[in-house]
Length: 158
Picture 1 (spheres, one colour):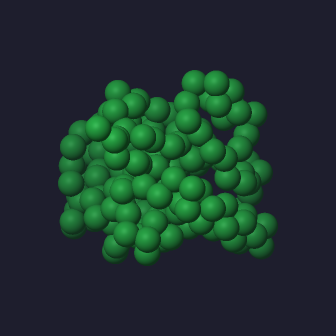
Picture 2 (spheres, helix red, strand yellow):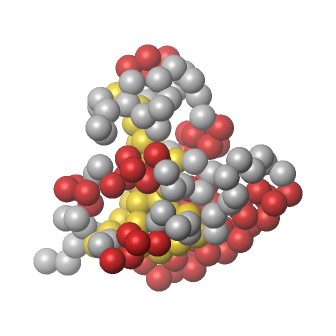
Picture 3 (cartoon, helix red, strand yellow):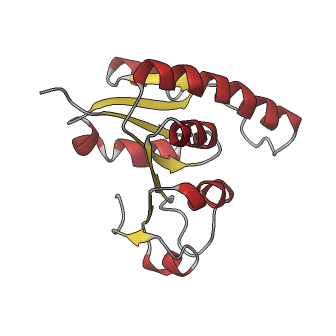
């Protein structure tokens, strides 16, 4: 039987660490991990099915360079979507996931947003953008449900 295709997308660092905690689940699918290219993520090619988007310099604010990265990543995301064409896109968030989620939703993929474990009682800018059209919006702390009314609390990934 053919496995369903999914994409797991996130920025590097803690967001990626959370995605990798889902390994037992995603290995049962025809999965593709999409994250930012960085010295820390390049070795993952040896262990996972992975593609890279343009990363941004650490500490960089949301300036013109950030907007440029979003535009470049939108084109890279479109290329990846055409190649992999998933049934679902699962993300632990950040700016890296925004273009993929928009384009995936337009192409008919289900969007599953898992709010970062670090968000105990605060909102996230990227989550606020995706929240209105996410098919599932999962939080890892019960207190965050008051900030995102349609959120589902399933406990922590860790």
